[in-house]
Image (cartoon, rainbow, N blue to C red):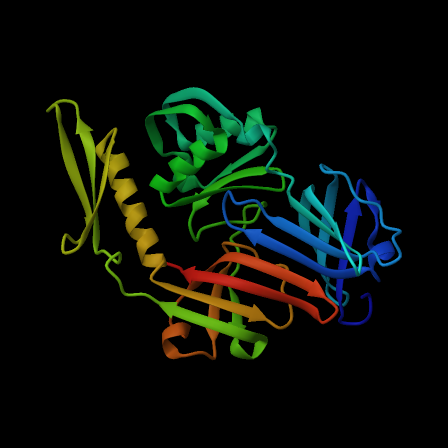
Length: 329
């Protein structure tokens, strides 16, 4: 797979490049690049017809680069082997690995609390405890959190809970703990992720879905605790024609308003979805990449889209990329 304009890959296991050794054995390689706190997944299927392949140990580290011989490889990160299966006949070795950034420590439950802190300070504290580098968008870094308790809850779950109230995405990638508004992700270097234009001619299959249902509400109502008046106050974002009510009582009006706006934004993004398979894989496309579509129905082309999942698949037929998109608001 190293010829002109052919798909190419590099696999490093335990610091040793094994690409050449397994090139003729590789039946398929599938990388699922997930959004947020769902770990990226790597699956390898290898031919072991001669019985010479060693079964890797759980916990082994795999580094993957993927791309094309002509344009170069894209570093897709490090993965930790967590499942191995040998089957036959014909004999095959299947290896599954998850993003190495999601270690057991960061998913361990703990108890603590944060009082009068900003989101940026909370992310920085958690990042430091796990030897990660914090990266928070300016808009979110200064958001004040009056008080939040972490009771029998992992650091990732706490951050996910906070992110939800601010229509944000939290993720761990390449040693960074990142928090950003949905649709406003940046590269590790801080640059905006550029919009990629995809035409119908570049794909094999597509599916567009637009849903009109009872869950498509026009506004969201939340509540906050008015300590002076000793009663709950309500906040409505959007119109009151068709309301979704969040029963949780927030610490103050600002937090209640942020949560209501976040819920309304999520609802708008989920009205229309689009899935697309690219005949020639684009391993540089990751979740949060803005997409512009051309060559489809006018209703499809008119949307601005955002990648929520990218699945890169390599086998004897070539390299393809499957994308799942939501509308960008």
